[in-house]
Image 1 (cartoon, rainbow, N blue to C red):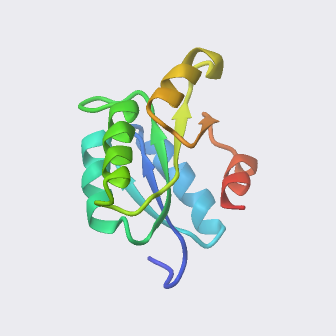
Image 2 (cartoon, rainbow, N blue to C red):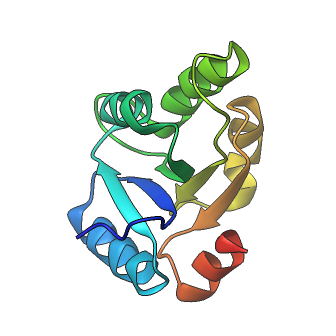
Length: 126
């Protein structure tokens, strides 16, 4: 059930367990959660709902289209004014140090280590 007037967060991940967990954490904080299973689906959801999404959590490793490519495409649309600007945070299970260049190159706004914790979520919400 969607909470009227609450923040919308888009969680993009190919692992249903990560969705369910993130969704439970965000809903506990009074947020609405939209989900997508890959980068292509994420772009579709953002095109439809960008005017109400507060931020995006983007898994990096996904089939069909990974999080880096999806972020590059979305950031280009934002730069062109096609969609409103939305912060995109990478979700990664990899070592942050190995990925930093890729995060920057894709113009991600920040990154979170998996598994997600309530502390990480609170940090983004503030």
